[in-house]
Image (tube, rainbow, N blue to C red):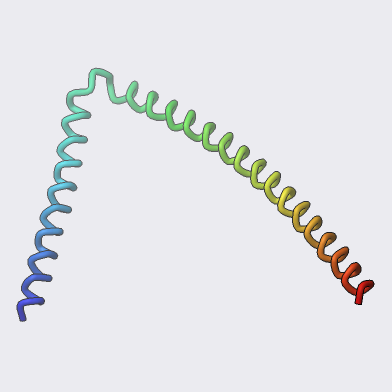
Length: 98
């Protein structure tokens, strides 16, 4: 019985923390918008410009990651080919000895 009580208390405490965080976020956003030195239209333009900038950076990063992944795949493929060749040569040498 004590375990259920403890679990319920933990759930209530977590709910209180989450509620506090949500209310704090809403309150903070409202105060930020009310106290902002720029107009809403100007703020939206700035946000849009930054969002476009982030989008462009993400495209560049995605391209770099894709390029690097291809390079790594080629390197792995080359190394696998080298290992296969080495194993093949060793098998031939072993069968020639035996």
